Length: 541
Image (cartoon, rainbow, N blue to C red; front, side, top):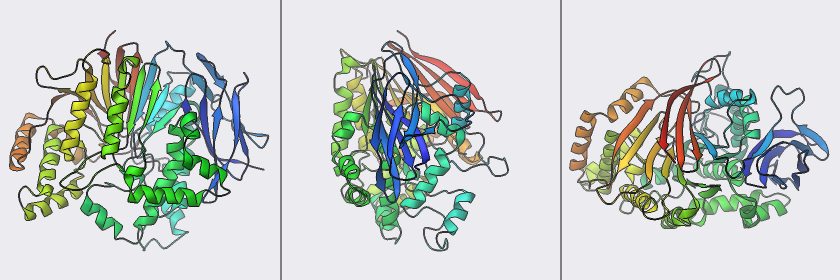
């Protein structure tokens, strides 16, 4: 009899359809069944000995919240017997309901040892507790990177890995292959609260570095060094394969899935491992052949989730956060039918606007690595880049400026949205920053950088001090000195911190209705609740 190994995860939803992701113990027919007649079924597909299904659900009605069951070969496997949680539901908001978007990043999923969580309470657990008690429910949950940590495994996973192979051989206690990646997803998504939350709140995901390795694609020199190791190729292919299965598929609409030749090939093959592995290998050698970015429209809100890891151009004299095809895609999606949306959300795991000193350091370092001060400074710049993680948008100055220009163009003229929000994580704290353009060149839309992380992780006290100092007047002065030494051009925008920095395990929520937008930041408390740290109005009708 087929069993449910992982899931269900409620992924894509729109006005009449949804997708539900599951992993099963054997090949079977997976079905989602709702009491009002909505539902759907599909056969599982196989990758590396694991069996998965992304079940299309049709017949949903806007303005309803419908409980569902998961049935494998005729046997109900979800809800779990004696579950302490309410029924999982597929909620389809009515057109005029507005949208509540909760987001964050960086969830280290190691289970607490002896009841003591080394990094504090998990914000997703706290959110699950509130929703399960009948409290406020997000319409969509955006997970902006580091859903799993391939390079920072837990004590329990260390023991599991040690039973498979010799940890004295590279990559040691980091994951090495597809099977070990599945262990990370089990550890993360079988957390009871998170499992239930992901079964009942739709989610959109994008990777960041730790989903593969810390500072993934920092530079051409970094990539050459890591490619020279004997373990990297298997690690990268397995990371991309597991991301495609566990995260990427659920980001796509049923129409996009139907048009995806890889999805068709994997489903039609008795074992799709070879097809998926070939796809991952091509993605490695020709990143422009694959698009991990995607667009979702939620009524009058447009979400553009942008790949800022695999789509990079790493040539020191032509560095770009996004390759030309990816940059053109972003422009097209932002500018298409602007009158059809009131709010634009740009999901990029890495913040666009950083504390001023960090921005200037990254821009300076990029100039050094480009050779503006000679070979010795270039070598120093590369060492500093890797040691200090200097690889955000500021480390790609041309891309930083291009994004500023795109935002200004999108937010100007007839049909401009009320708000353009850049949603980011990565930096293990939260803040709000607002850019300003030179007079007469800026957008009419309210533009904000909203950064929120971690969901469940930590930041050392010294780093906290550094982030706070990075916004200070003295830091700005020092940053300008670095910029002059690097002969760096002035950025096309200035910006001010409007809130923060805030530290702790936390989530941000945007409530969007018509042309109004409100922001709330909440921090997880040890009693399992979420505490409101900041609440503000961003735009009004």
